[in-house]
Length: 276
Ligand SMILES: [Zn+2]
Image 1 (cartoon, rainbow, N blue to C red):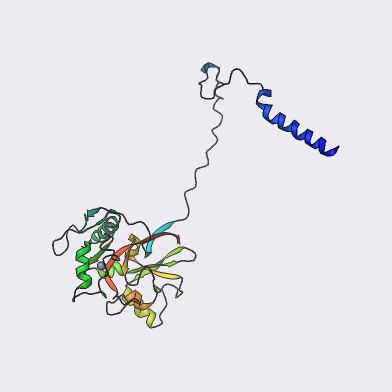
Image 2: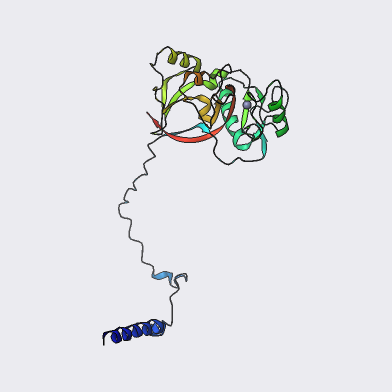
């Protein structure tokens, strides 16, 4: 008896399912929402101007942020070369070129320096694959100074080598970045990088960044998304290490390359919250 009832129910349900569309009465006229209302006159008269409720003024974002570049560039490598407007030629008379994203960063830093009467001079910027291969295989440079063209940011149009002029300005320690809290703090007084490194070595930590591995002393060039070749950006040492801060070419990176305080390349930019 029971199984028969269930079967009957099932049959009934499936009957209803298949015949449902026929059971729903289809309205003859469907009001189209797109159609404009034919009688605009019946619009309700606007309510008389009551005391205008003061719109809450959107509170401006109270948190100031700053863009910093210090990690190895992880974005897509753009293509197409443009010439620097701030320094159109190298000291050897070649065009100072790079991809737009790099030249924009360089020109912004270069113009800021120019405002202070500091005129940068460029040794080398974009290098083609074969020039870089020449550097890499040459006796004069070789693999400890020049990267293989496949790894070189110069070949990617994202690196620039400057002369020693105004090196201090570019390497000046201007603030500290706390990585875990993504917080940037300006130093009350900016400190030349060599003095900063000497103070760390002498244990004079007053007015320096916190001596924590998560705290990175920020050099002025990093504010422009250009990071000096003081460490391997893809596998960085601690930026607060005095040897890294000094960035002397007399010292080597763990990968055997010399530190290059003249070399600046595009770094990945992080937006950090500025602490008062
Ligand atoms: Zn370089």
